[in-house]
Image (cartoon, rainbow, N blue to C red; front, side, top):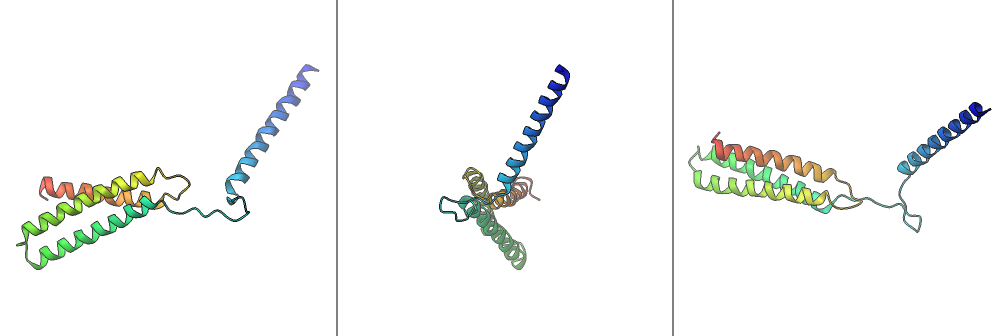
Length: 134
């Protein structure tokens, strides 16, 4: 009698666990709504958007530097170097904004991640160019 009672209780606990898991999945996939029943819109993190825009600006600046250097046949060293350092600093600022954007609550973090990856690649690439002289 004790054995069947234990089996029944064990089965009941297992069913309760499965029910809780199903309820959690349903809650996860339901659309979030505010108190008026309207769908809650989740926006991108503001600092993440800034980080991505800074990455785009740094990429444009870097491509502009390469173009100017090509057109002048490598004779614009001071101007190219100064703007290159500006692009390097810009990418560092972009990484910083991306990190701040990851701390914003209830936001989409895709732009933060894109900004951080692009800015980090630019930062490392420009650091290699400046310090190694590639």
